[in-house]
Length: 265
Image (cartoon, rainbow, N blue to C red):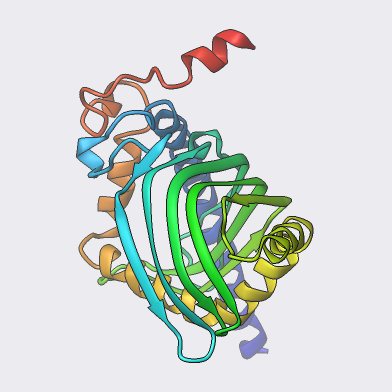
């Protein structure tokens, strides 16, 4: 009897504690969404206080890379005038946060349309069978890209996440790389294959490398979070979520990146 009574008291205390936490979590979720909206309005400018360059469009290059997989790819390449569009059109259809370690936090971010254009070179071979001759324009578009992130939070010092899970979904993928392969017929076939089955192919690639990628992301995130307390992170977000408190984090950055889009609606 005493055991049952004690269990009931523990459950009741837990329920009361959680009920008290939920409104606070909702407040933080509201503040975070407000912060993201303020951030979206400034993504066409560098944001010095966050250490970020302009993100929409995001411009990179020139840059060079090389890959030599003994059995699959022998590759050298470069990009120049790389420009990625559409990052500021993101939406956050789901956001659930809780400081309770046993419960999962969930963030869902979607991008209706992102696309990049670039000058590129690609020299080498695929499996020593198909020779690359890439030199020209490269274009890729992705529609309805969604990333679902869930994790548990360790709020005691050092702040960290664990049990990270990442799910990726693509609506459609289209590519056009000038002169990618030497043989024109094979080049056309590869483009047609990717444009027809690219979503499935990328899904297979993600499934194959997901564990390694998620592990590296979790390590990188925890290396960053370890420098802060939970209150520090919340203060950064709340302090940038609009109103008078938004000035320090977005100081000097005008929220004018979506004015044309808003005026055309």
